[in-house]
Image (cartoon, rainbow, N blue to C red):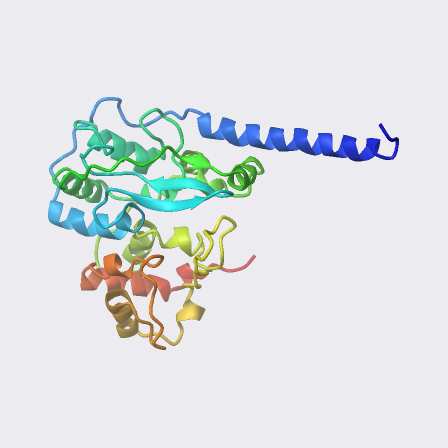
Length: 296
């Protein structure tokens, strides 16, 4: 071998070893088992209000799992991977009969699947704030929806996604790790047109997933090609909006300046089905100091 090539070969060899270690790290994180706070058998859940449960499902679940809750494609790009939101119906490829409550509880409270492995892209760290009453309502609704037979291909993470996970640059993708590392969830407030209840709905509605945990907006490291950059939802960005403007945007999909919201990425058709007091609560929170943390 040419002596001048030896350093290049060594560097390439080291880079290959480094890449393998990074990929191994991501695989170990995906395979790690987490303890669950939910019993292995289906827990007893008090009867819930399925009508209210439908509103919760539309606000909290439909944007990822689809209007029929049978799942949808999140990404299918070589370098990102093939990712799908799961089928939540009792149809083929969905939640097996008799396991609804336990699987929903584990996913929301602990961020794990039936085998105790972390879910990917599930915002459990925010959803786990859901009150016991709202959770019972959600499960009551999911228990009565029509089965949809829809099997999704096996999940596959692309090389870039695995590298990002291995380097710890997108920890929020791993639901169980995020839950385990977080502080105890703030108790759910009393429903009403209040700032605190609005913050609760922001968590349940997935606003912090797309617009970032502090609602600052901006593109994600693992954004799908063609995905629009999420705008800031902090008070300064909404300073020219009124409550009427906000409700109109949620129910008609149009901003005060006439811009149409892309329903593929902004789930206004689902959020718009919230009741008036819930939309007002969202607005009160987004206009409050709580939605714009101080920069330290």
